[in-house]
Length: 204
Image 1 (cartoon, helix red, strand yellow):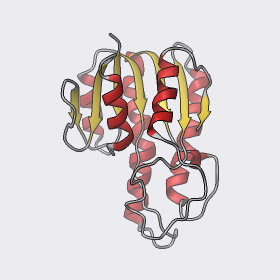
Image 2 (cartoon, rainbow, N blue to C red):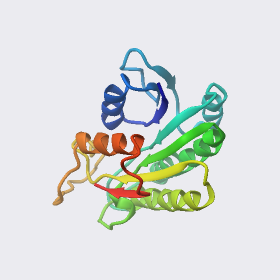
Image 3 (cartoon, one colour):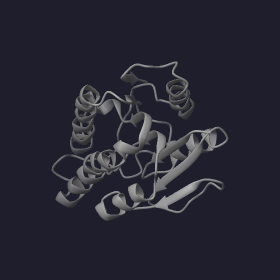
């Protein structure tokens, strides 16, 4: 049985992935709230806490797959989002994945999968700081792919996922595009794990 470390700050996508992969893989679940799934290993963390990130690395000998993501968002006009909110978005969505990837890289045997966002490639109003964090990390992953040759790296870019993703939105956002289902994300993750999908970037 292989071992997967899944990170996230919200439960919707990651709870779905963990529930659907836990019978095939040993799951290590990292989240800032309480564990909701029995029979998996669990770290409760704050993504912005570098000491805690090091503690995770110290307690893991090796993993087959790292599925990494961090989502903090405050959707509003750029002027109305506070400086503290901007900092939280960048620290959580960009800096912490870079630090955790650096700490865990020697322990990963097969693949890093970033589940990111189509906002890293497309422009919409009211997404400035959030989209910037996704854009920067997309380029981090691209550069890492060119440098790291002993494991594979992939990015999955969902559109708006069918969850209460916009609960922190301070304005009404009219979404005119097809949403991405949880099942679509799981399908691509399984294809990557089974070596049926080898592309670096997959847009959903």
